[in-house]
Length: 264
Ligand SMILES: NC(=O)c1ccc[n+]([C@@H]2O[C@H](COP(=O)([O-])OP(=O)(O)OC[C@H]3O[C@@H](n4cnc5c(N)ncnc54)[C@H](OP(=O)(O)O)[C@@H]3O)[C@@H](O)[C@H]2O)c1
Image (tube, rainbow, N blue to C red; front, top):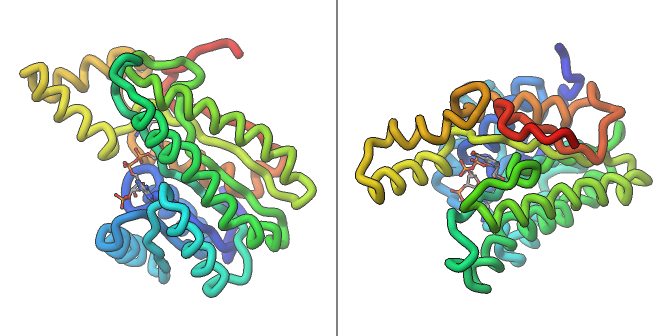
């Protein structure tokens, strides 16, 4: 299927690895011009080189920590210098802190809020004027999580903050409609990225069991019986970022191996 995004300008934030990287790759494969952003400049530069090698086109990059307002102001200035407009924005920054209520102080709550909510808010703010200039209408795709649809134990902060992102999507989809910008979210289930490899290593060390046992424990709760791969989430990101979903906005689409099975 041709997604009809050849030559369009896309910014992917959180793109040096994981779901963001695979999303950038999927957009490039569909012919979009892709700019990438994340925190660590060395990782980002290497990711741009890998993408260029895989897709044969230049990939420009800018390093910014989205939890720091001044970095995103700098991103805004860089974008204004480098692209006349944006057609697609993907925000793939976020994650969870495995903790119980009594282990979380105010600082932990605020840090996770910066990471999961304010980072995306700032990135949308930085891209908005350029998205308004998209000829066929801008598209924003935010990475949410399955958690708000079936709150996971030990994932309190991200369950709460990712639910906030769904509210953001549903509110902005209406507010940005006069600018012809659609806003949607992809909500992954357990996906094997650095987020999980780090967590598995930690749990394996804490419990003194092999990592494979931890993987089995979490995988058995998933109807498809295994973790997802980032390359299995990216096609949905590209689809929502395309013109094939021109009648879809304000939605949060699960790509989760069936783990969140609520009826509404
Ligand atoms: N993996 C899962 O199981 C899962 C499940 C549900 C939802 N999600 C969501 O999917 C999205 C992507 O997750 P992922 O698993 O692909 O993550 P990941 O593999 O940990 O990659 C995160 C990316 O974001 C960048 N990043 C992290 N903090 C940043 C910051 N403060 N400012 C700018 N960039 C930052 C990282 O680059 P640097 O290292 O350079 O900072 C990296 O490029 C997140 O929103 C996550 O919450 C993931």
